[in-house]
Amino acid sequence: MGRVRVWLAAVTCLCSLFVSSPAHAVDVGLIAGPWRTEALEKKYATKFNWEGVWLPALAYECPQPIIDPALLEKFKNQDANKVPVFYLPPFFQPKNGCSRVISYTEITSGKYDDSLRCLIRQLGVWGRNALLAPFPDANGTADWMPYGIGLCGNTLQSYHDAYRHIWMLFAEENVRNIGAQWCINVEYYGSFPIEYLYPGDDWVDGRCITGYMWGPACDGSITSFCDGFLPTYTKMVSLGASRATFLETGACDGPWKPWWILGIPEGLLHMPSVTGLLWNEDPSTPQWSFTSDYNNASAFLTTKAIIAK
Image 1 (cartoon, rainbow, N blue to C red):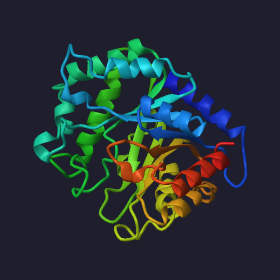
Image 2 (cartoon, rainbow, N blue to C red):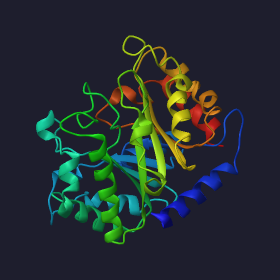
Image 3 (cartoon, one colour):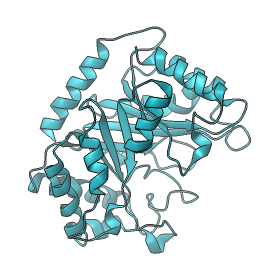
Image 4 (cartoon, rainbow, N blue to C red):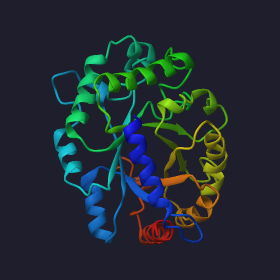
């Protein structure tokens, strides 16, 4: 992971050279996949620096390719400055209760080592720099996160053991182009405290906080971008060494959406360690899309122009 950390630090330093008002410079990316990202870049005459993709890696066994080779080839042919972020959840597809969850103990036991090694070797041969986030949002509660701490037999210790087991396999395979992305959800009532989940500085190259604006009828607690992220961000940056920090977000459709998006630069003013923002443009969840109407698109592109200068 050390080699990737040097590369990631260089990206962070480059970002810090371009400071704008009212917020520091932040690279904007999408959770979309390279084909949709490319289409949106053409449509709106803009560029995105990060791309987030969810992997179903543990649902497959060797010798079948773990990641679609066409996906990796598409990434490889892109601008080298565009960095993929892969999310690796511990469940079989589709998600369907505990019967589909792979326990952290099973991962640590080596039961899925063949599958994981196939993934690691595939990424090593691919060769591009990228980030991998094992078990994203594991601090979530049972109403939406089936592999959280205390769910389906998972414990805090087994979480740490499984997380470190994956990166020890990367070391054994001598694959160093993939950085460790520690990803958690914004804290809320009932969520597991993130300070206990932190794997330690030696196991983290980048950090990610996930938080969404669900709309006043669903979650009145997130009244602004800053309200949603700042408390968790403040706690995260107090945990160990400084790391590049990414925010994953989106806002559901409604009259509040463009105003919420336009509040992002003010929120980022209070979060100076944030270097990247990933907006959810996954076609399977169109409610988050900034393309849903003209006002939302205009607000998003205005915000991007302000924070990415």
